Image (cartoon, rainbow, N blue to C red; front, side, top):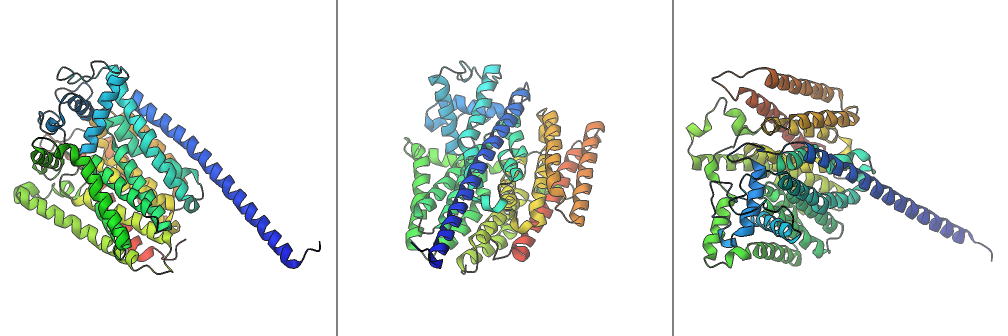
Length: 523
């Protein structure tokens, strides 16, 4: 048979396709192996922090700290009927997280019984303040398992989804999977932030699947279900709510079927989660108590010292003396919306009016930037902020870093943001005796950040060096000096106000990139 030019070209095309497919499979396998290696490193990192560092409130009666709060919630959900969970002894670590947190702790209590683990660790009343080795091991392992079941699988899916953006680079994977701030809080201080952040990542992943195929309504439904689970595990996830609302609404506004899927998914998920409380004898009262406990406005504008606008400016302006509680709630809400809404409306317009020239990658990048801006807005200006909620804006910033948006300085500054985020929680780590872990993690973070330092412009290099120098000076002052008797919190406020200045700078930078630097043809 004589081979014609057309046949030759067809054969060459087939060979090229086979070669490209082989390279894609090879690249995918390489990434999977890389992610498994990084996950193993991440688990080792978590185990080292969990097993060799103290938890919050260790040997600190009568309240003992967040570790005791989590242990106590296992105790009360295990022994009390569901109708009493949100009413019982509110002065001693009363349950104030949403229902999924309560169900999670109930499950932990039942598993400890089922496998004969932790005998006596959760006995009713008599186990208060129990910090035995057995209790600590059970609690520490439960957080590690939460990472394995939720957070790390969600990271895997997103890293596989966005692999074309970061070209399978090791550093992007490490920062997301081994996020130092998250590890220090969850495995050092002791909390379960990995669960609601894992749900958030799953929701983002399913939205990405829907963007690739807007007829895939099942992915849209899963995204909505995952996000409702995020809110119903930890109410601070409401920091993300405006972003998800505007991003999803813009895509379904002219599509009745998709709109119906979203409404049904959200209502059904909320209904299933809250049904056990509504079905109690006095269901409405129980339900209202759950909501009341989730939003404790009586605690004031901020708790402890946090790098928020209100705490940082309270040095000069005594907000609590100028305004009553209701006025402060209104003021903080308006301030948050003023900062967040321009970004949200811009996101809505761009997604709703998207043309064929606007790439899906642009919309993803725009969504991540908006997520970061909105969560920073809530962290900086909303009512009742904790220092640990800096994890919420940090997560979308890590996604911006993974996407390496147009190789802007913004992406290269994200590892530095993680260092600042850790620094903002330094007073908390001192209180928990986690200073050694904090110092080692910060040194490691600075070494890892050096990879990105060379990508920064001259001005940003100067900013980073000056900032790191400022942190070192504040650390030395807090360690060696004694604050004036009249101002015992002076050094702590130095730390939080210094951090606040950085977070404001990042928020402004994110706004600048969203409106002026992000290219609609980004690929």
